[in-house]
Each structure stands twice: as C-alpha cells, then as structure tokens.
Image (cartoon, rainbow, N blue to C red; front, side, top):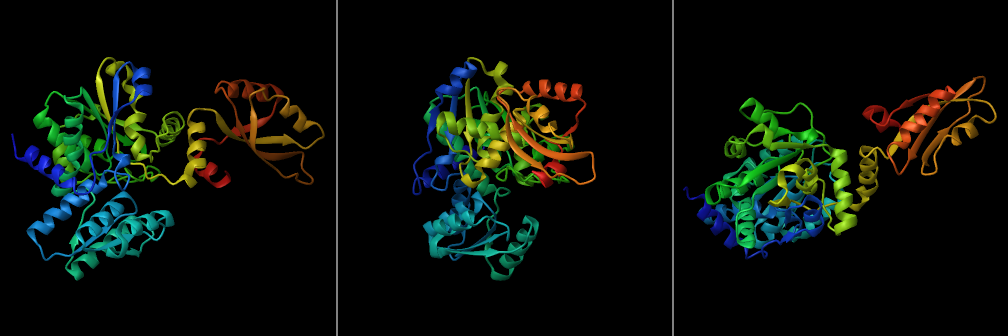
Length: 415
C-alpha cells in the first residue's frame, strides 16, 4: 500500500476547518426503481455547491506549507473551480487572481466574487477558454504567483480523494459500485486511487457527456488526446483533453467501464431529480444518476454510490433544459410544413392533431403570387408515438414537411 490513503485521510481532516462532510444519502425513489441500494454522495451541498473546493483548498494548503511566503494564486475558470479557489483564498487570507472568459454569465462572476470577497480579483479576457488560460498562465509567470490547476495536479487529486474517505466512513462498508462523473479526471482519479487500495473489491463506472468523452478517447488511444470538438452544454465536464496526471491514475480502466451520456438525456434526469426529489443538479452533477437505466440489470440487489458532483445551476437555463428533455423523449418536435395557400388548408392540418397534441410554436407568412407557403411549427404531445400517427396523416393528405428537430444547425437558427 502506498502513502496515498493516509495522505487522503489527512487532507480530509484538514477540510473540516471549512465544512462538515457532505451527506451520503440513501435515495428511496431510485432504490425502489432499480431494486438496489442507491446512495447519493451530495457534493452539490458543499459551501460552493461542488466538490471543487476540496482540491483547491488542499493544493493551496500544501503550497502554503511548503512556501509560507506564497500569497498569490492564479487560476483560469468559468465555473466551479473559480468558486472553490475564491473560497480558499478568503480562508487563507491570500490574494487570488481569477481569469474568466468574457462570455462568462454575470451570475457566475458575482458568485465567485461573493465567495472570495476582497481577496480575489476577476479578470475577464478571451472569448474562448484556451485564450483565457493562456492569459492566466502568462500573468502568473510575470507576477511570480502559483497557478492552481483545476484537475491536473497531484495535490488537487489528493483533495478530491476526500470524497471517498468520507463515503467509506459514512457507509461503514465498501459499496459494490461507485459511479463517477469525469471531466478533466481529478475527482475520478482521487476517488479511485483511494478506494483501489482500501477497498479493492469495489467496481466503477465512469460517466462522460457524449460531446466531451476525453477519458474514452484516452483509453482507446493509450494516452491523452485532444478532442476536435466539444459540446459545452455540460460545462462542468466538457473537457477537450483529460489531464496527464489524472489519466496516469485512470489508465487501468477498461473502455467498457466508461458510459457516455447524451446532453439532452441529461436534461431529463435533471428535471426528474428536481421535480421528484427536490434536488438541484447542474448538468455535470446529474451524470452519475443519468446512466442508472443503463446499469439496471447489473445493479439489482447491490449497493451503488452515485457522486452528484455539483449543483450550480442557473435557473434561467430551465426552459432550455425542459426543451432539450422533451426533444430527447420524443415529446416535442419541430417541422417545416409546406402549406397550400388556400382557404381551409390550415383547418385541415389542425384537424389532424390528436387530443394530446399542443402547438408550441407557429410561424407563417403568406407569400403573394405563390401557391404554397412555409410554416415553422413546434408540437408538444404526451405520448411519443403520437408523431407517427400525425406524420402518417400528413403523408396521406399530401402535405410536404421536414422534421428539423435533430437538425442542429437549422434548429438552432430557426428555434
């Protein structure tokens, strides 16, 4: 056994200066659904509503222990890492300079400033994160500050391992399975590095957003690779390249242990947890719960811990989340319909709709000197198979139409 477990326990004890252990809660709703014991490790309930505070605090503490004179820390982040570092800066009484993209929502800027108070300065620069990161690193070198990495740092990984230390103490035994979200890999690296030594019988599943599967790509290539394109919706886990240090601690994993979660499906999970359980999860925070249906046959009668990694959700995004969830479930579709420009044509179309079909969007402009006009229409329904009946009627009546629900470019422009 290495020194990692003991160091992780020491890091966990030091965290008690900031906050009590986050709850490990048995979820009766999910347990009944899957015939298993489903426990949620509620990292959405830290003081900054994510686990990122653990790594930021631990890394800052260890730098301060080694270099007591270091009083300036720098990071680049538009989200949870920035808030965790701000909180740690105020705790240690050190100066923090936090670089954020110009496009960062004001709500995130305000929360970061609230956690750090007069100990942090926020610099908005760059339209994209890579530009922001380059500016932060250049400033850090000039200022003689310490750059606090969000995940690819051994001390950050050690801090995230405290999630596993608390989980084992709270459960009192090893679970059968731990389900972990993965972005840069800091949380997964820390938790598995601890548990593989103290409880080698534990199995794992790693969950990545479909549009940011950096761990899967690295496992397939045998080394970290940079994804050509990343979907930023799951902003807490949408990372183009897993960390070198984190991957070194995760390279043992098998590709079949990595599950990919479509962004729109995650939205349905977020809504269900909010409406049924009253739990507010950000997209990355819902990843571990989102894949439970895929594991249903494997987890019956077993003890499963899902790490809900964060709850920093801006409710202004709620309409978008609902929209995406409905589209994934097949309960909402958008069509471009070629409508004859004659009296009664619209009535004919409306009579095709079923009793549970509702028009959520309708745009039509009559064109002069034309026999047909184009209609943009959005329809919501209660049963996904309603659309099969509707399109069959459209075909029989000779209406020309195009389903643009899954046409990303066209739907983004028109809807």
